[in-house]
Amino acid sequence: MTLALFDDVPEPSPKKKAPASSVLPAQVSEDIQSLAKQLPPALRLGTSSWHFPGWADLVWDQPYAEAKLSKEGLRAYGQHPLLRTVSLDRAFYRPMTVEQYAQLAAQVSDDFRFVVKVPSVISDALIRSSGGEDAGRGLQANTHFLDVTLFQDICLKPLLEGLGNKLGALVLQMSPLPAHMLSHNEISKLFGPLAGILSAQSAMKNVVPDAVMAIELRNPEFITTLLRDELIALLKDTGATYCLGLHAKLPPIEDQLPILRKLWPGPLVCRWNLHSKHGRYGYEAAKASYEPFDKLIDEDPATREQLARVIAGTVKGGQTAFVTINNKAEGSAPLSVAKLAQAVLEKI
Image 1 (cartoon, rainbow, N blue to C red):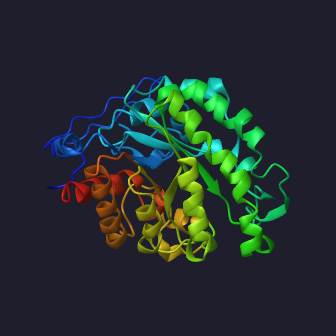
Image 2: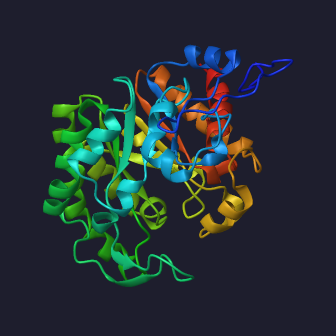
């Protein structure tokens, strides 16, 4: 099947300007509509955020300002037949209110689901610099790291009240731990408070039966050492799952799959974040290479093929799958979604 995003038209008519008050969706090709209809409902594909003007003619009918897309673009995003979830990355940087969540939920259909990240004030062991050349550098210890009470107050409660049944997955992205916390003994100390947060799986299911709590790691020590067995036991005890993180800071996908096999049967949560060619700290390099995110530049067919097999096995086993892709994975997240969807379809 050809993955043209738009129907070929011999003489396209000039585009009409959208009213200043609205963001309109792009016209999607029949190929993409057909592809979306053939995918299993249990599979939800999407992107990491949606505020990118370069997605004109992919998701939007024309370029819009980033600020306008951030505020108003989700309604148009949710009309794309392949995009049935989105990673709400902004929640990681600053806790969101009930009202903010509710405003987003009102923009999408009842079938849409959000993937939400736990705020960094809870998930990061360090308080980090937010700007300049030292952006991301740890400044001091974060006294709220893995604070269960704070998590419930500023994350879980407003999230469940604001999104309700449109919550799909809540991801605790553990930012890289400082060197002094990477011994087996020090990491083991984290499993107690981690259990308190991951136990939110039960509270979530009381409100949204198909919602998933997942942990995403940025330290391979959790995955490649004896700690892996402790991590698996923790996830089984709490009912949470492991978020398959495709990022240069982690081992390749095949080395993470043993964790998912131990947790089977269960849902899949995956975030395809960054092409490995850019290295562990390559977000800015990837951004510079790929903007405006309107085309695939560094396709990663090996990762796509492996991920497609995992997704196909998950949904054929009767489980749900939430998969979000960053622009920095291959150059353009909507186009990566289309390629991945086709790869999955060939395996189910």
